[in-house]
Image (tube, rainbow, N blue to C red):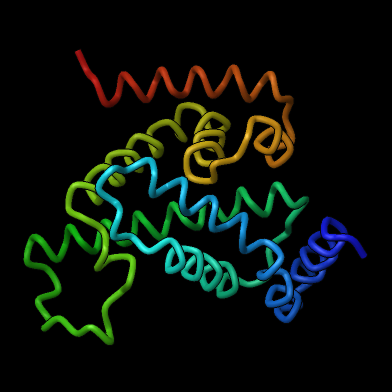
Length: 191
């Protein structure tokens, strides 16, 4: 069985509820997930301390805990993993904001600290939360554009991979990506 067939087989098995299949799938997709996590780090100049490996492993755990997914394709799996990475980063940013504002005043413990939360800078946390808020607004206006932003921005997916994951044409992805970027620009640069 070749690489692509193995991924497809394990995705189908996991979709049927076989969690062991996900453990076999993970080493096959690890390199691609690291690439997505690294792309997120590159997008934020002050995110150097965010551990790419920790983000990939958190993504793996989140997807495993959520149970069987109905993955339509390898590209759909990468879309779901990009969405998981987004939620991990947003949750970490929200925790960081709460801690900065005096919430959860427990003593700090290295053993109990969240790797991702502890390593996000304040500036990165705020930027991620701004992006998240804008994406939530965009989701209400145009769900497809929001999904495209998740694929392209958080997943580092190509136009073709995004088209496959969302089951739309590459030209639709390009057009929607362009409109979404313009809309997001106006959200971050009002006036």
